[in-house]
Each structure stands twice: as structure tokens, then as C-alpha cells.
Image (cartoon, rainbow, N blue to C red; front, side, top):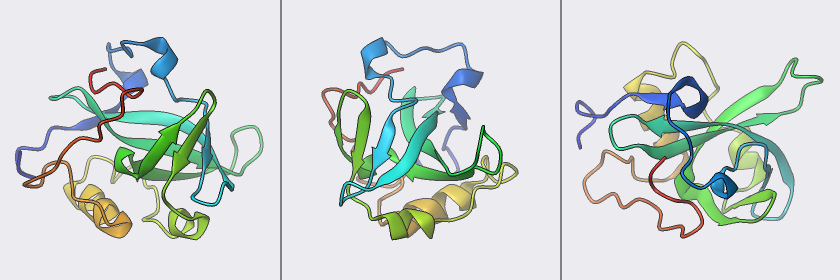
Length: 142
């Protein structure tokens, strides 16, 4: 799949789709960095409508009662482990804090996703040679 062929990414909750195995739903899970520091919670899953795979998850940090939350999109490729209530990453807090800023007007923009993958050092899912992460506890179809 090339960037021109790349299907639109949408929040799972904005579709008719559901997660095949509800115990695999990481929304609401605490996100921990490489050193075990709490980064926030998984607020949403962004799925590729065409291939029905999660490509990014949205992490909400800070704020009070949902106000003034910072949001970051992190590729699923950064996940190293998923526990009962935790998602572990191979990233440091500083890396996530410096990620491209969330802008709802750019979420559908190819450049935003390309830059986000580049920032984190992962091959974009539409790039030649990309392999979806093989998490047995993180099914590929949603």
C-alpha cells in the first residue's frame, strides 16, 4: 500500500466495528514508558478502515475531568507488552512529550502520519516492507 492508496484512519468508536475479543480492548489502559513511568491512558484507537487494523492509539495525559488534556498519537509498533490494565512502550516519556502535536484538523492528513512515524522511528504501515506487529494478545482484525 502506498501513501496515495493509504486508507483513512478513524477512531474505532466512530465506526460500526467492534473489537473481536473484548479482553483485547486497551482503551482505558494505563500507558507506561520504557522506564515504567505513567504517560496517561489510552483514550482511542485509530484504525485503518480498509485493512481493519489498529495503526495508532491516542494517549490522553494531564487535564482535569477531561479539560486541558494533551493528546498524542503513538504507532502500535511502539508497544512491547500489554497487561491486564497496562500498555508498555519502548519509548521514553520525553520522546512522547516531544511528539508532533495533536491537531484534529490534521488527523486525516498524510503528512501528519508520515511525520509521526518518522518522529518515532518506525516504518509507516503503507511503506514497502512494513510488517504489522505480531502481538498474540492484540488481534489484527477489529
